Length: 207
Image 1 (tube, one colour):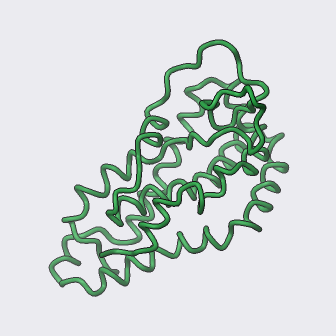
Image 2 (cartoon, rainbow, N blue to C red):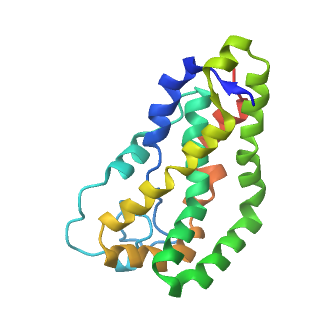
């Protein structure tokens, strides 16, 4: 198995591990004119409470403060977690609120009709990484992180996403899960466009 040289880890992994924010995706594609621009992910604009919102979680802060850096490994880490979190949220909601499961699974399948090729493209970057480091020095291969280990680190962010939902309280959690099909229709969930800076960086590949 090819390895990722350790020299990239101080730059890539710490920032990558911060990136498992519950995406603070915007409100639905056609919000009311008076809807606040800061409506949180999964909260329908029409039902946004007038009371002050709780302070943003560490996940949301990380998501909001991260932009493409031009460093492939950092930007890929940010993007792959955003892509996978779309499915993770459906799974987490289905586990916690089974009544949403069928509707949300169907909504995700419909979302994949439009965005499946992009999901496949980003998942395929693991092969790009493996090939790239396959051409690296033998010493670099010995010092690095295997692609399988990298994939495991990506999946290890899922529990943090689940915990963030629970931290906000079950009522808010349920509202977000019930809003999932609506959120998938929003412009922010067209990740190829809404995350265009990260996409552009990742498509340039390791360099």
